Image 1 (cartoon, helix red, strand yellow):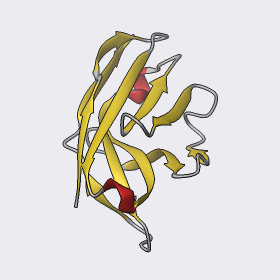
Image 2 (image 1 turned 180 degrees about the vertical axis):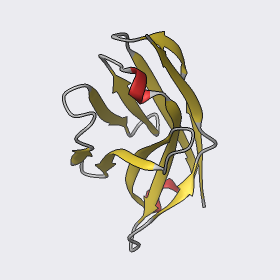
Image 3 (image 1 turned 90 degrees about the horizontal axis):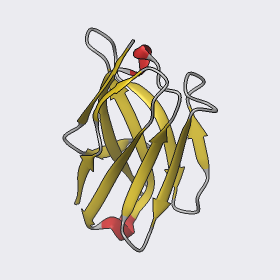
Length: 118
């Protein structure tokens, strides 16, 4: 089992930046990918970005060019650098892990709130 703890959320004005962190513990050697999801009030959960163990990344179209996912395997931490934030980026951001041999993100953090004001 993998435990995930997010941090770094907060309130920022549009155009500003935030950097989210996701610290992992437990059976992390069995993790083949990490992802960041977000869920805004009244909306479905949305996949924002993913990163595999070998560093391959994906981004939702809505954040391409503004967000950057990265990882520090020594610190067992994944990051989401968010620049040029928009009010539409307001949501609870969740870190998730996909275990090797599976197709779904099954391990989840508790979430961190990001609020972008105009």
